[in-house]
Amino acid sequence: MSLLEVRGVMVRFGGVMAVGGVDLDAEVGQVTGLIGPNGAGKTTLFNVISGMQEPTAGNVLVSGVDITGEAPHKRAKRGLARTFQRLELFWSLSVRDNVRVAAELAAVPDVDG
Image 1: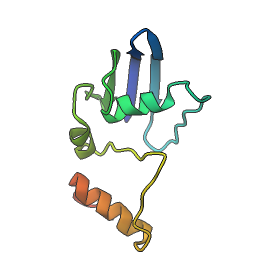
Image 2: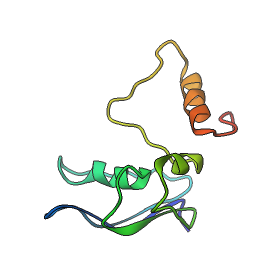
Image 3: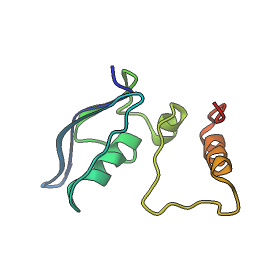
Image 4: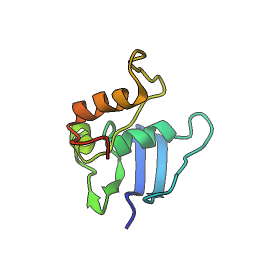
């Protein structure tokens, strides 16, 4: 079982297929990348994973639990969050403190591990 599993995810916007049947596994302790040209559907796929976009078909699982219908805030409580291309940080804070702020907003109990 993977930490994150994407199974058969498709997204259509009208007659346009934005994401077509994507399968993806992200394993614990490994770095998983997603690359492709502009317009390939990378951002749309991340929107599906984070709950910002409902898929036309397919499922997203975290640790074997299907979270496809869950709202973004519920996914964040499971530890699944995303950043956007335009990252807004508190420049007066350290990296650790920026992560703490995000963890508090997501109600994550301990970011110091």
